[in-house]
Image (cartoon, rainbow, N blue to C red; front, side, top):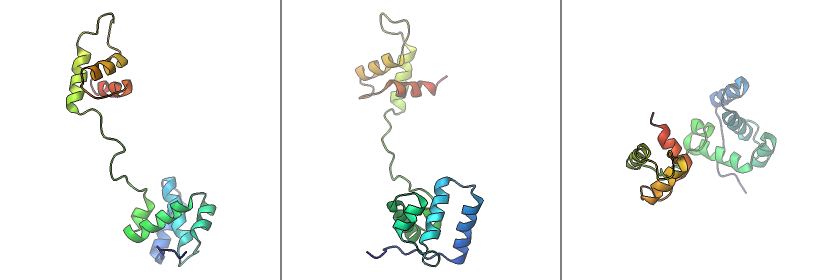
Length: 147
């Protein structure tokens, strides 16, 4: 199957990538992406995706994705990681819910308890329908914001 995205680096781009690799003061993924681009460059080594992936200890899809980002978005985008379009999950607590949890913490603890625990606060927040579900760790993070 022919390559869909052909990498042809100019002499300046090759020098920039070689400098990035030789100095070695960048993030490891940037150095690896630079090495990938240098190896699959048609004006240079001209390796296949599989050969570059084997030599650089990564998946052939990584090589293909870096190649595609270079052609579509440019050299800077190819050296960076792909950014998420949306966060992995929506925030559970908005400002109002956080305020209610803090107010709950400032109140009296339930009967039979000397103080509020994180798990008690989490259970009470769900019981009062402040949030549909919440873990004690999220409650800890909310309370950590206050002194």
